[in-house]
Image (tube, rainbow, N blue to C red; front, side, top):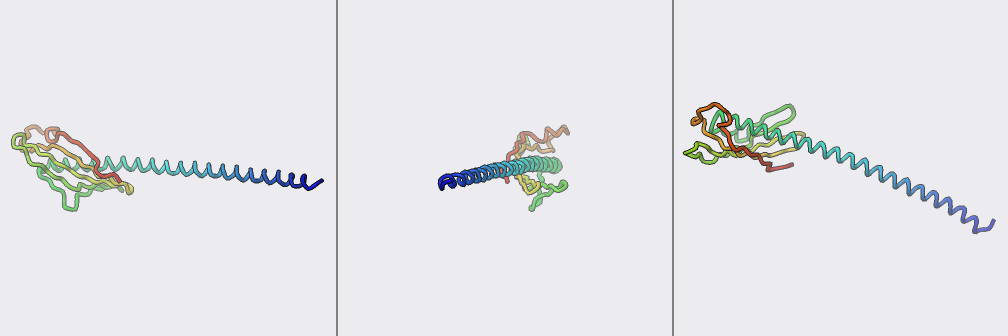
Length: 157
């Protein structure tokens, strides 16, 4: 056996070992990337679900504000906000700002700002509604008190 043949036998094993290492590292990196993507997609889905919950909590607080306005035409929440708890969730009526009352239709526009919190996800919702003065409503139907209700998210965290 000469020197050339001896070196060739050693180099074949070296290439086989190097190929095995490269293939193993490639498979390991694909596995890590796949598991990381799965983890983050699960986290994104949970955040989306939490966002939906806060959106509907904020809408629920807007409805509570409408009930308060129906009871008291000039209802103003506390300066620190009117907070409502639902299990571990909470929503708050932050403010209600009224426009001037129309002397013909006896309506005014109310802008209601609500904030909801669920698992550290927040939604701030602004609701605009036309409110009719109950002194000029002759039917007890709730639809006569409130018209043109629109909701708009003003803060998305």
